[in-house]
Image 1: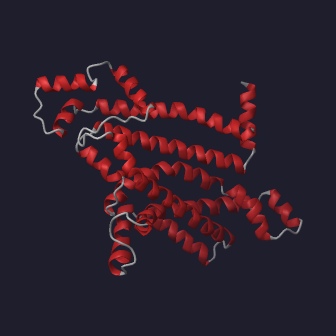
Image 2: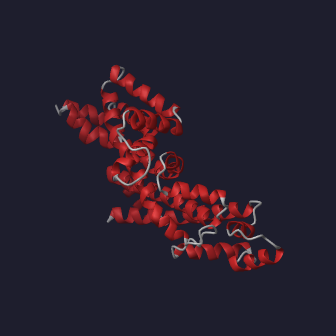
Image 3: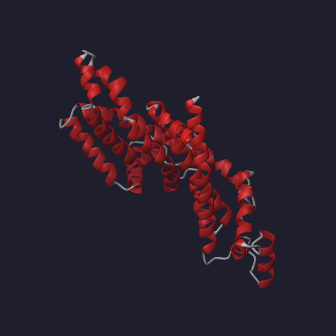
Length: 319
């Protein structure tokens, strides 16, 4: 019951965040110097005259006040209607639905890689403090923070796809096509998460509950698995939830390099053609993924530390 109350409270907090994201996105696009009506005509290969521009402005509802345009677009979003692309003349929702599985697969696989690799590295680095494995993990952290993603992508393509011929160069037909793009996104997160977990574990191992467990004669690995890791992994959970939206946005560059048929290339084409409905839809999708990632992170943290649920219930009872 407490978990349901906690999740419901977090869902209510999502609403103002999404509203703020939609408002900022809609406002910034309207502040640009490009008239959406002229962009629509340019994408349709029509010479913009004053008559045609005015007609398109009425057709798109651009002659109405700003707040009416925003409310209308918000109502369309509630119906999962992102409008129609200026360039392809196809509903944006249909275009995004065709490309979203590729982008979502890269995002989730990269996050899974980052978590599954960084957790063992962080644990080993903490247990072997200042030994050779710890120094290797520090070197990986330095490389992950220093290497640009696009350069790492080209290095992986050159050595693993061209020289070794282990992976395909382009496309997204099979699961093996997703390995290199996902690892490109995950590499920087692996170094970050492993260092976070190492630092958190070293701090947790000095807590009184660990000393008490050792005094009771409990094996070290049981202490780490049942007690220390449950407490130390929380910063990694927080970082993973916050990075989900970042990974989703990062696929724009990676998909272009590996020629993946995802939303990245579609978004870049929409920017080039000033396709406002597509840009607005993609930005809203990134905001939604970011909020959902934080929600999942909060739920996992509440499961790991039930005190968070009790604190939320206490605040609600006070109100």
